[in-house]
View 1: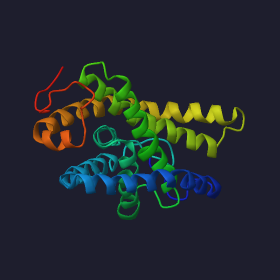
View 2 (view 1 turned 90 degrees about the vertical axis):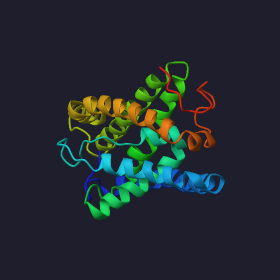
View 3 (view 1 turned 180 degrees about the vertical axis):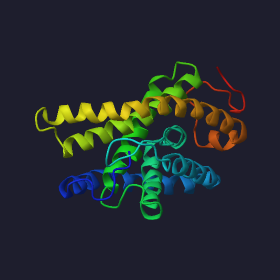
Length: 230
């Protein structure tokens, strides 16, 4: 998903940076508001960012100019809401570009849009749509869809930048999606399962902090957030 430094045409790189900027600014404000209202959430915020950093730093073979890996953003969007992940994910991608040469500065806006904006919003939307399903099912699909939506967005970005000479954008988009799907579909399933385990553990270890953040208020969960539900 990390589009490499200099891989996108300058106009595309600039356009994605402009498009992602408002989400990041909004996310910074949401983090400030969250920390002000809930100072005890700092540790959980740091843990969510570190989790995303570690998972998305994994590099697996994929299409030329990009990479395939888990994203670790679905869990954070469920806990803190997607705007917060826009800012946290941007920090993760910036440090990976500077320290690991994973992604790049010129492609940072495109990578932020796919992994820190579209992925978290898509996963959170699915999680909320499944609010009447068993909680673990909603978490699984929320996390898995967050992963897959990131790669659909990256395929779209690459298709727009490098349309197929014969079939145009849709031909290139289908080709990039097909190449990503080989590695990303099983990765999304695994990330969804790991997400369920992680979220269940957090409900046990950090139940009071999650409840103060408003997590679970509309899902008829145990007020203590200590009990696991099917």
